[in-house]
Image 1 (tube, one colour):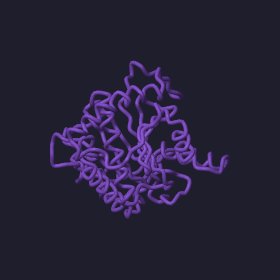
Image 2 (cartoon, rainbow, N blue to C red):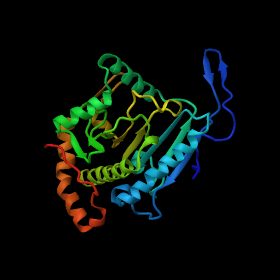
Image 3 (cartoon, rainbow, N blue to C red):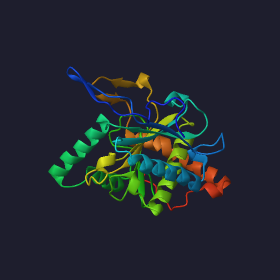
Image 4 (tube, rainbow, N blue to C red):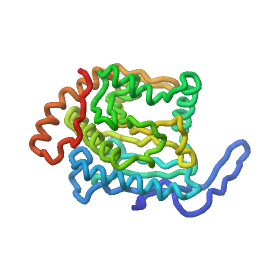
Length: 283
């Protein structure tokens, strides 16, 4: 459904103009809310895998529909959990923003992947996936289709990535089997965050290739989850971040302690237990 207070409007043309050395255009785009459940008190972490999968299919359906609009260059799917993370509604929902420009962060990711491929002749994200599987210390869960892990050098404490094993650039090309596996590992990871960190606020964003470049063989789509950082423990300027934490240690604190809690929770609600035989990382 359309956002009640949209950041962008779907009607009208871009009307790009030059103002001296500066460029401007109309705020054209789409801003939608994806309602995840009719139940007000539920969340993705406590839904069944099938319910989460339905939400992910809604993501893909809206993505494919808006991709047909030639004005749209990039479609961002994201979720804010908790008021601190930016959620203004308590009812479970995600959001979608389609824009006529490509964000700088995605430009940087794609250029970095291109440089890595030029030097190594390999996908940087596939190499990250292999490295995390080989080491195991930062792995949260692996169900054969997707890997959840703590990045080696994360920007935020408890930052978690979910990455498909199969190399493909856009979420739009996910298969039905992969969608089920994605729903399963996303729900499990969010439940571990909920139990391991005391139901903290968090954000997640889906990193996928631009609409007109979604066959780019060098990019590898993935999802990034990041609890809002504690600014008292973060030192940041325009060039670098410094945290007093270690991804392997924070991963153990976050997930090793929550493993028994998750197992107990699933025993009480067996219909919501993971449907795949997920393999845990070496602790």
